[in-house]
Image 1: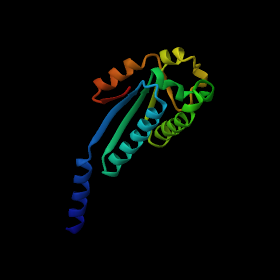
Image 2: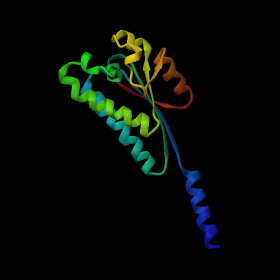
Image 3: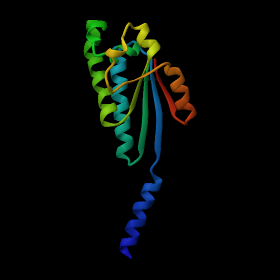
Image 4: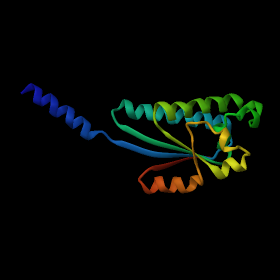
Length: 148
């Protein structure tokens, strides 16, 4: 009997787990702000998972946020922004590889920033238009969080 009670309580805890779906949309050109936001996404995801819930996150990058996706960011980012972009890039790598967060960069913004597709880090997906992706995720029930 005790086994059944334990099994039922385990099943109930799984049923009660909540899924948090969000698309984080970054267009900021403030390197320090970008670094703090990427770190905050990581912390938020860890807090959700620690509670036993599930986090399903996507990060879309366009505008001034795009230089951090380049493996040659040191050639296009001002010197004073380098440490922040490096840390932001480390965060998105951990999110993509360890947490399976989908990181999407806009091809239009790559072009506007003079970044070639071959320079984009391998764990980042290139989208023709990240606005279309963001709208699609929102239509699928993802909350939209913007970083401007």
